[in-house]
Image (cartoon, rainbow, N blue to C red; front, top):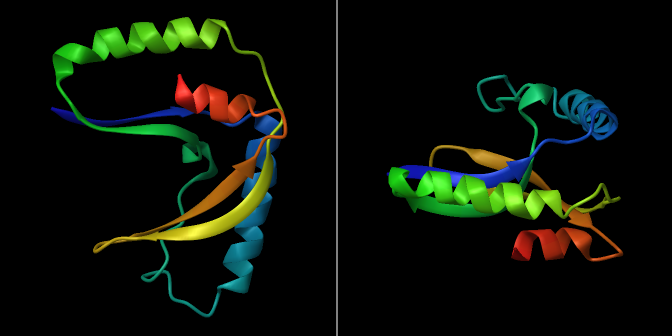
Length: 112
């Protein structure tokens, strides 16, 4: 079993903007020690579309095929930041950004 999620990379422009935001957050939160906040590399930023949870490894090829089929129908679209929050976990916290898509294409993609 593997814990899987479906994600996509950010465009270079969006990744650059997020990296700038992260630098601003780092400066704003500099009073906290590095032991309290672990910043990930901008190259690891991604847009999570759906968390699949534990999946049998034998199902992964079918999932890959379905994703490739869905991706063929998609073209680029614009999304904007809408909100920000934190997932609280026992061992870590994850900062997340909610997004807005006026054309609802992002929501449609998550539903496929």
